[in-house]
Amino acid sequence: MKRRMPNPQNVLLSIDSIYASMTKAEKKVADAVRANPEDAVLYTIADLSEKAGVGETSVIRFCRKLGFGGYHEFKLAIAQQVVAEPKQFGGEVQEGDDAVAVLQKLTSRNARMIENAGALVAAPALEAAARALASGRRIHVFGVGSSGMTAMDAYYSFLRIGLVADVQRDGHIIAMSATLANEGDVVFGISTSGSTKDLVDPMRTAKENGATTICLTSQGRSPITQYADVVLLVPAKESPFQGGSLPAKIAQLHALDALTSLIAATHKERAVRSMKKTAQAVADKLY
Image (tube, rainbow, N blue to C red; front, side):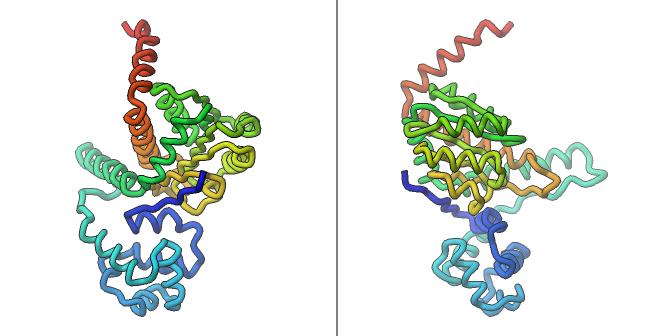
């Protein structure tokens, strides 16, 4: 299967997704744009290069790394986003905030994360992932740490709609499972950073064995994407001290919901039959 790269519509989210892979000069341009997108709309290429403290060539390289043909195309995309960007109540939770303020801030933040996930996940990638999963002989879902919990959610969702799947969250077992995956199997790796060795190496092994590989990540140029036939890109803004933050998980779950809903809609008879069977299987577990 031909690899499908992310094609996000939201420029600022796109910048976030590949920021880690940018050069020092490109990061300066990115910082200048992210600091004030409204002003960036009005900058000439000379203005932006001066603001960032880099040469105009670095600005052009920055635009091309994002997938634009040049600065003018990039500027138009930023302008369209700034016009469409909704203004929402937000801000970080501060000491002294009452319950109402905390609820408002977190509701706004989490709602925005879902909107961003919808904007960042490329429809062609979602469709390719759905086709691969629906036709796969067996699906191996991999994730460690916080992503391991998302992997469990993915496994449960796949199981409910009738897909043959298993889930592994231990690095050693993931490595062994990947060596047994081959043509006809699908390996679904979940890694927010896209750089977790316990995920990247097994993805490479599975791909070399002929398995179809799909990754769910927040870094479009991370190592795991190099071994994925399909990349599902979701937003995640978290510092090194916030690994596994709830907003990142919300974005992942939203993408998974869209993916399983698409599979269920295109294979409705199988999905409905499986959901009825699985519901009946646990019916006597309720009082």
